[in-house]
Image 1: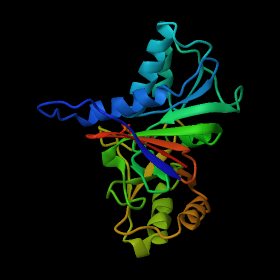
Image 2 (image 1 turned 180 degrees about the horizontal axis):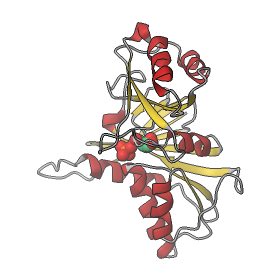
Image 3 (image 1 turned 45 degrees about the vertical axis):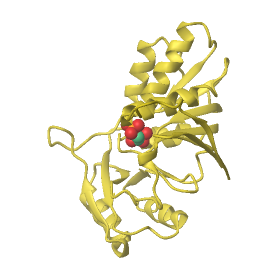
Image 4 (image 1 turned 30 degrees about the vertical axis):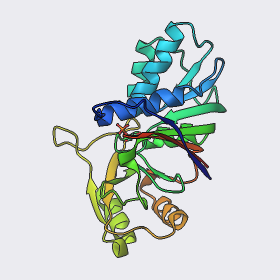
Length: 251
Ligand code: 5RP
């Protein structure tokens, strides 16, 4: 893998502290520089990806991009893209995607990701698994030494049927990592329901999961599990916006 600090922000005096949302926007705009007319694009979900979709809509409106087909990774992104006039399709009709741009909750040194705090991990994994290039856009707060290392949730999409049984299986699987499994609730205190009608069980880990491929396989072997939020060896590039500049890391 190669890593280069591509650009430094112009020197500013006195120093301007950028908000997390401004950093997300900087990473998103940088990623959209990789977009070319005629591309089939995977459109990510979340507050970072939202900036990228806005920017693509703006460039289309200005005539600086044309013939784009967007493949949204959630109903929310689909609505946003429709409101911006971005032509849309799906994986059934466009199984080969040129480029996907999406955020992440965690990025490890090998560009493995945790995604799904927004709850869109299944569609994201399907779309991003069908991409030639997957550019992950984050602010520097998302960088971790190991997946689960932020102390935030590692999400798993499960079928609603006997979700407690599945949650217990997941918790027991990572007993050695001090795992606590919790059903995700929405703002009303009801179970959060994904775009696919499923629930999310969030795993909280005190230690790393060991071999990630082994962990991934073990999770997917539990019958009630639909998909998990670890994106192993999928991102081809990470664009990381920090206070001092943008870092572009390639696989
Ligand atoms: C949604 C995701 C998002 O990309 C992830 O949660 C990052 O979100 P944000 O850009 O709002 O920080 O995986 O399922």
